Length: 437
Image 1: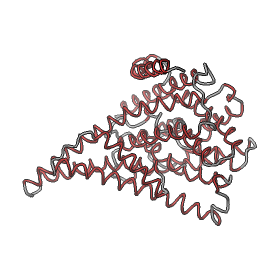
Image 2: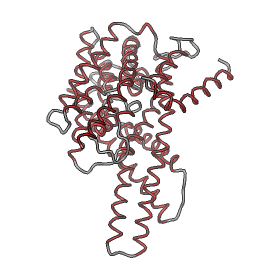
Image 3: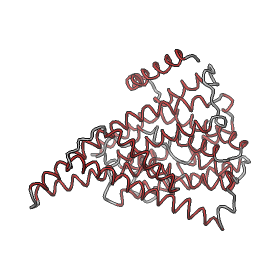
Image 4: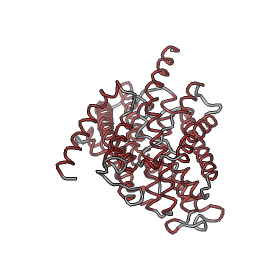
């Protein structure tokens, strides 16, 4: 295409993105589904204006989806205020661990039933296991003080399980002998995989993210409130925090997705801690200077997190547009086979509900929350990232082709059915919740 055509397309897309919030209120379709449809139209499945392939362009796809997931995970972390009660976190952690493991087990069995090898079936299951933080805005918390257990649980699950799926992707690559890995490289009885890819990478990601988020926020507050350094541009400092945290995570061989999500959580937690310090300072006997600094830090923390979150939300819209156009360009009509549709349907109506009902057994969710949680497990950009990651890290080309078509069909169906149902179902749920209160 000529430069003029590209300019025309990009301008039209940006205007469409700006107007989509109003336009889609009258249509039974989500913005993600609309962008995906446009991507399909300009890709090889439509007018063939943009040519992309999951194997030929794996490195580019990995980079675009990686950025999209990182931005969204950080924004999700900022949306969630740390709840002090441990019980509030039990359900999200169970969803992101036990629920995901059950999903992977069931999807692996489905892959084996369709005559995939164990490594290929496990890789497909691990790629499809995480729910998507980029596309789940309709079911996420509405603001930092949102106390709804369902929205909090689904939001936290989306933040946690993108990182928690990585060990199973690595296990599948090891079983396939990809990128110099082998079953021997997994260690005796998988102990090397368990120690490095599970314990170290997850634990290190959590610790690194918390440390980076807290240190960054405290530094900015110190410079602004005590040293009178009006830095400004906190939004770009947040981008720096994402990049810095992710870069350190990669060098330390810990999960960067998890670290960036926790960095957002930690930033929000510092804001809450500073507010508590300011409230204490107003009543406690202390030097006037200390009171002034504490109150100034609280205001700065509140302003900064609001500015950063607003910027992250705007950036999320751009990465959603780019990611869904990309997914649409990768789709082909011939991918819509009976096998791929069956796997997608099995994930949506069997594996996800079974996993959620088991993971929430005896928990604090009500019956209606369990039903909605079982339905809302949208798959999207994270799955495409893992697919591209597997392709660039030595997964057999023949398996990537087969798995790729399955993943793309599953994501497309999930985006459509969950996108159509999210707004009306959540509106009904919200109305029922308000009536009970």
